[in-house]
Amino acid sequence: MPAGATAPAGATSPADAAALLFVITLWGGSFVASKVALRELTPMAAALARYILAAVAFVPIAIGYRRRGFIVGRRELATFIPLALLAVTTYFWVQYTALEYTSAVNVCLVVATAPVFAAILGRVVLAEPVGGRAAAGIATALVGTALVATGGRLVPDLAGGWRDLVGIGLGLVNALAWGTNTVLGRKAMGRYPPLFATAWITILGTAMMLPIVVATGDLRVLPRLLGSPPALLAVGYLGLLCSALGYGLWCRALSRTRAAVVASFQYVQPLVTAILAWLILGEAVGIHTVIGGVVIIGGLYLVNRPATPLGRPAGARRGQRARRRSGRGSQTGTWRRTPG
Image 1 (tube, one colour):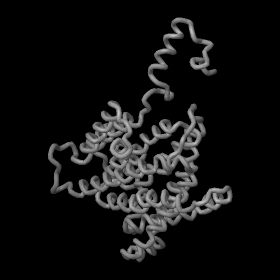
Image 2 (cartoon, helix red, strand yellow):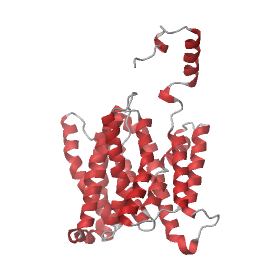
Image 3 (cartoon, rainbow, N blue to C red):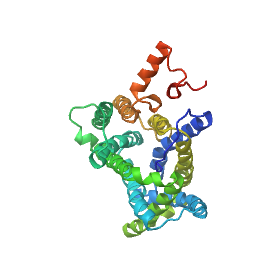
Image 4 (cartoon, rainbow, N blue to C red):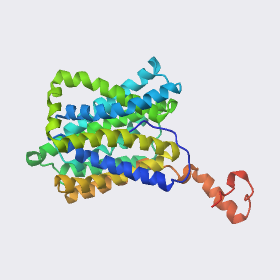
């Protein structure tokens, strides 16, 4: 996902809602497209192929910001390089390796627990408070993850399901990496426009992939794309649609809509992944995965849910209701109702 941003309060317009649903549909399909690409490529080669396309798409954006005075100096590099290493270089290497071991739906559900790790690390690293609701959400999401991982068994089936456990374990590492990226970038990202930061994180993360791919010999498998139209289309979908277009639309939504509203659209992603994995890959979704997915989404809702609707303190809402009942305060600026 792209770098964070500070968004204004207000209702989500139909156009923004449609754009967000479109992006979530793209990202839900990314796990399926990645499985298709991995039929021909190694995990690191697939990640590099995807991000070469994304980086090329982001270069004009980086140039445009430079003309507007946004220069990348030592301070920016010190901020962006660690985030690029976490969010691009290693993130998709681990994620695509996980997809080689387990289903697209399992990886999608487990990676979706990243906000849980962000909440835990925010408490440990930044001393951010974790309320009772968020703590309950963390516990709930972890229970759901355990249900997906074990297939509902008290003891996992290590003989028949060890590959799933490896894949889900890597998915948890992936979620931890994104949670760490979120915590490290939380304060830093407030200093930069989100699309500017996302462009440079993408470009730098891609550049750091190159020596790894050369050193591991994975570069040799890239020509296989030319002989496999499905894999070539999958990589194009991942790089141009999921990364370039998807991140651009997501950043635009973050600049126009409250972050909590934007985050709520992510709950649709596992459903999209499950449907597409069934249609394209023929992956069956067991009842334990469905139940575990619902439990995970419920936990994420509790973690992501704002403390109060519209960001106002509970005491303020109680005071407003009391003033309305008593007939006082209707002319006070603090309590004036907004039109419509």
